[in-house]
Length: 320
Ligand SMILES: [Zn+2]
Image (cartoon, rainbow, N blue to C red; front, side):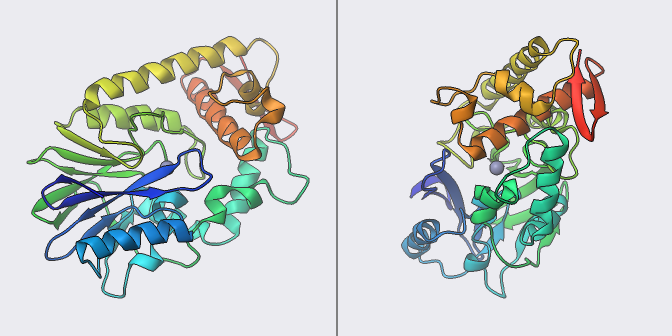
């Protein structure tokens, strides 16, 4: 565990067999404690967090969840008590409770099929989704935070900043005086945050680019992401992320011609940093994330009027 600032600790929680490898849980200590993000609902993550609690002598904490993904909220139940406040933005909070049931995953599967992802031959594609496997299992009684709400912990005044994009209700916490931003998966140093279609988000890349501009206007000296080490220069990283998506959009445009293609087909022609011989060798979850990212870029181009979209046999297709 590393102390990153007065009363703020970063615990690296392992994510076994996951390409992300690990997640940062942040603990702010004080009169009341605050845990920011949790790790998957699996024993390796729980063990790591328990050791951090023991090291800091913490037995009880409030919890803030940056967004709905299971590597961030999987252990809510294990690390909260009846005295804990559990904070999240309303959009992702509602989705977190929705994803504890079956309907969310069925709807997500149907959504991908609508964009050309093939139906699974073993049931639902989402049956093997890692986010589903390591999800929390019960409804959470959230205290919802909205843009501008302030949480006070450990001598910090943490203002909620809505940053939709990576998920529809992603939220950061910002201390204006200390110039610290807990940015969840909104900005990551070593990888590009996955931008993927989600229930209730038709143009996630559009949302994401707007949210990047929003945090670019904040004065930030210490950027604390949910994966990887703290990022030294947020502004330089934002410029890189914008450039990455600009190039990705050009790449997608270059793949399209005057024939109709689904997002699933476009994804196969995009370049991916994965050591596989070809698309057929991609592990199923990677095909899923790749297609999600193709959809995000196609939808952005469609909403900016640069390409056409048509529903053909119940499936969205795109062309120039
Ligand atoms: Zn995430």
